[in-house]
Image (cartoon, rainbow, N blue to C red):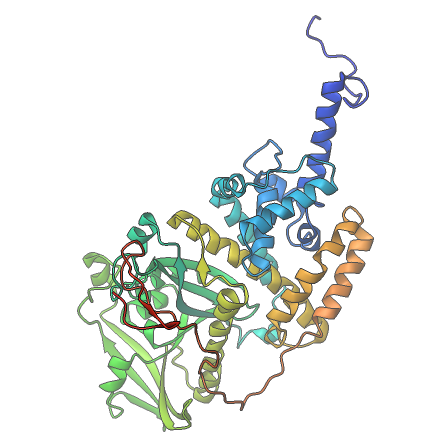
Length: 487
């Protein structure tokens, strides 16, 4: 009976010592902070990432001012606000703590940066899957094509900080001298054109071809998916692997095959369509398959070629040759397939939103692990904005790609703080979210299909020379406020 607890149902803030009352008060306030009222973004996106879900997947049981959930929302705010500095994120944490009556964290960003490093990858993966499930469940039928889920594949790159470990994993371009460039992380992304969200990303050294990382994305495809890709991905290996998974493909014919194409060969389906059979070539040097896996690929592959004329950016007539594994020309009309391939351009626009609008083209991290984690966070931020765009498109009865990503992002960043007053008030929160979506529905893109503009830079750069030697060895030779040859 000595260790038998008594008065267990009474709060520590009433029946306890002064020290324990103060500790209980801090714990209660901390619990409020780390649930839904942590930030305006947490309240705004509560319908996608509710507080109980984040608490369930949080690998840490102890509530801390720099735990997983506070750091996640601070990092998310950092990315949504044009990849702001860590000082900006720490200022957010200090403001939230002060509002809730908690001790404010230190202004030193090193503690926050260490907390970002401690953020578990599994925690971010669970959040990503939750958002993707939310987007998939609300995909409209008008965003599909003949029962197919449209997926697009493309590659890009991001610049990292010049550290030894980054250079080892993602080396700088070979044309640059050592110490004069930055590591470049190549990325290949899979985009769902139905809801516009990024399904997955794979990274690779930019010195390698993007086709080497593409097979890793195939596990995220299913039977009802139609994969669109440019000619850089049109390889025998990738098409055969997709065919084995019953995934249809629609790609532009690779330039090496296009140069040697004999249109007289194969079975004629129409004036601009033919069925041809490809033989398995010798295994290329960049293949990711073993010799046994390469031999396991089918010896032949039957595809349909569609060749049409079009006008390129220069206004000149050119020929577009497409390859698809959808062999039925009556069910899948060739002209419709060409129009469908034009939707592949959407992935270029989404890469621009990710890299330019969110300012993620340059990632200020010192290790490859943090680079991949930053990429994951930027995808989460992008997809959360897509959830609002999806609801806005349904409100406006328009396709989701008619809604402006930049317009919705600006509205979210301008109004997220007003949502903090609605934490714990479901009716008020629902009204505020409905109004936000109504305004988002007005942020529509002015579609100008025949607009043509030169791809040129108007602003002149500063007249500084390029760094041709490591900075500690570089000698600057100025002359009359102008720069001449430097050593």
